[in-house]
Image 1 (cartoon, rainbow, N blue to C red):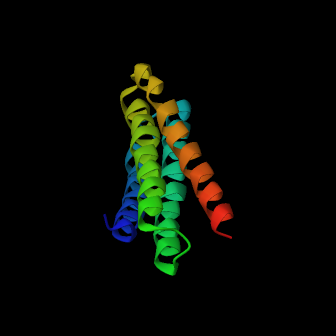
Image 2: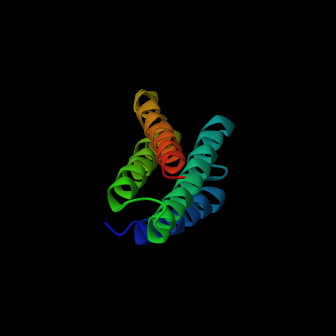
Image 3: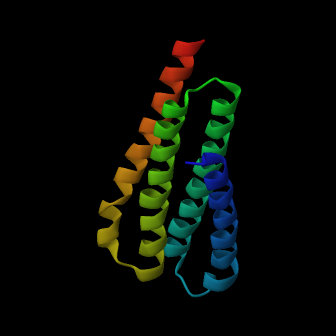
Length: 123
C-alpha cells in the first residue's frame, strides 16, 4: 500500500469535506450537528496527516514496512469509522451510527500506542 499517497488523498478529502460543511451545510444543520461535522473533519485531518507522517518514518527506516502498514492501516480505519460515522450522523441525524464511532476511536488509540511502542523499541 502506498501510504504516502493515501495520506495525501485523505488530506485533500478532509479539505473538500470541510469546505462543503462550511459552505454547503452551514444554515442547513443545527448547531449540534454542525459541531459533530466539524469534529469529524478535525479528526479526519489530524489522522490523515498522521498517515503521511508514518509513511515518512518508514522511508527513513524508523519503522519497518510491516509496522507502517499496521499503524497507517489503523489510522485509515479510524478515519473511515470515526469521521465517517460522524459525517453521516451529522447529515442524517441517525444517532444509531454513533455506536460505530468508538471503534474508530479505538483504532486511533491503537495506532498511536503501537507507533509509540515500536519507535521506543527501535531507539
